[in-house]
Length: 237
Image (cartoon, rainbow, N blue to C red; front, top):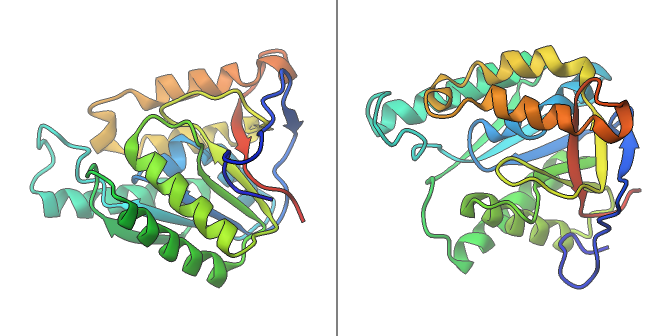
């Protein structure tokens, strides 16, 4: 099954599939910047850990465009600081397996860049052999998110990946295919988001993301609790 929207229609049904828990099995999450891994699918990643699944997170860029006022030192100091924030944030979720690709943040992305992402993603997919892959969804507004989406989808197709690939939202809300209950991980995700001081200095992510996660509980939980939404980009084994 293709792992992008091109060539077939992804269901945008009025009522998405609701899951009380994520599908068990090893998980590989691709995140564009150090913080997207928590802001987007952080609740679901924590729930995977709670049910005993192996979880690995790949951070694609170094995040050095995330401090435009240079409040947190030099570029090198910021790069190191953002890595430590991700390690600390993910540790709040129970995730300790983190890979940093170190691509530059916020650059103009070329076709060659997407091809490089596809090759790196294929290597990580082959090495880890996940049951579920999380990546930015196809409609994300940020160019780095779109580039990572395109590269990972290309890798999934080349490997004929037969697990499930789910796109998550950060900057752009979606009409979801799958909604997963994250109420049990709310505290973990809040604590994780609070670890990203460099980013909270610019945006109140806790306020906006938990507003979105609360809204995602509307259709299935009568507005009680929290949930994360996903675009289905591949089938299941």
